[in-house]
Length: 206
Length: 206
Ligand SMILES: [Zn+2]
Ligand SMILES: [Zn+2]
Image (cartoon, rainbow over all chains, first blue to last red; front, side, top):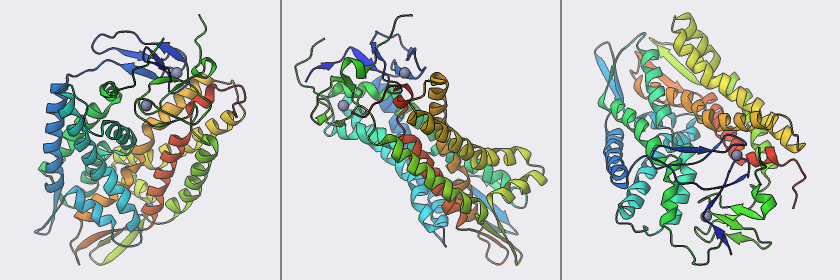
């Protein structure tokens, strides 16, 4: 089967372009529909790996640290994202706890784990075992990762509750904020270069 | 302006996972680089997208009519729906939060219904009308889709925090389950829709 590495097809409208060399920070858009075709890598592998490690640390914090605390008449209550998800699990709405857990914690965690695996091999210019599977899964996970929505939800909850309770933000909210920045940066469309690490059949033509 | 060819006309195909461009064959094909199953268009795109959209529309009715949250304060309880929640914020003077929740829970889902419906009808008739704008609308829907999960996560956080037994407590109600399902189904509808259909103005059932 012939493959054409010098070509790129717009996935939004099927028009074909020839790839050009890019400067750092360049973005190439489809001239027909305006979708992004491909972009230059913003970060080196070392930088990516460092950020992925930072994301892993923040992720651990998100799992154990409360996002905020509230007080009412001398009583106090704090909640982590996990406790928030579990609170949905009570009563008739219980099934929604599952997708909420996926969006808030499980998917971001999987993304970080897969990235650490793939990047630590990429650093040695090698393809990680199961690289194709990892990258495919990363692609499927991307739309379901909702850390930034969690951050907004926490902020809305703070405003909502501060009307009749004392609300104090806890360290967990900073970790959520950090991941809001890191996850899109690490899983953005420019991870596509990782596919290039895959071994490919020899026969290539133009 | 010179005519840009389409992959379909050139007998080419791009892998939707790793975006490698390959020559199209008649037999079922797998990507030589990542072994993903290849196809020119997402299979049964319009039918699947329409089915998910219809399911979301039907579920949006109970999502709005049924209470999403039950708040108990000093023995007196009150169930609130999405809209009464928005109105409450508005009356309390928190118009910014009212606006955020209204956008995430009403404006975003409703505009998704309209846009996806429009895209499905126009793709079904192979219309040449406003192709660039429709392509932009599709990208917009993909981008904003998951923000509707905001309300689900707000209810989760509030219900986890406000647990002061006799004094005050908050419980999720079944409406939030329907609302979460609306968000998931509209996301699935957008993902099933193949934006290349916007540009397929000749009949394509090969
Ligand atoms: Zn395009
Ligand atoms: Zn592939």
